[in-house]
Length: 205
Image (cartoon, rainbow, N blue to C red):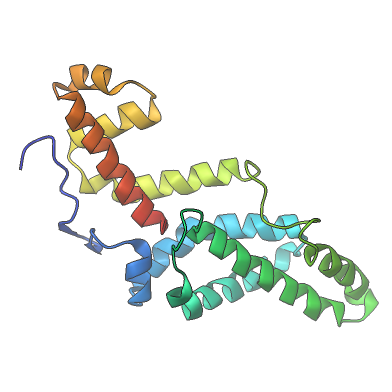
């Protein structure tokens, strides 16, 4: 294998790196589930806060969300380019938040029933809440990407990683990065594509 190639596809500490996060999760791989929760729980918690879930109840809603994900993961399919795991997860979280407010709405008013009923009415209206707006979770999405990149970092040769980083993160041209790393511009583009493909697999998309 040349120095321009990535070792992607070789077995790593967490198992085969050629499978996606979702493929491993469907196999009930505990490591995959741990990675999934670590990556996505902060984002789901942010959605819950936006929808009005009480802070002390967010952990319970998170448990409901990921239990549902575990039970229905086989149903997720990328049939269109717009089908993403994050969008599918958002739909599940939205439904579990509605369930939460339905339960709360049945409680006495002193325990939050009236407020819960109002929140339920709002969250049931797609025009009022709907999917999380583009850009509203930028900080959390950046953190999600940082965690995913940290997880896959060790699967690539240093020069492959530097080529990817120079083009994608630093925004430099493939030619400039190639000159610095003594690589061909085509090899830099291949390195970028390999890391991005692995990143998408790690994120389930």
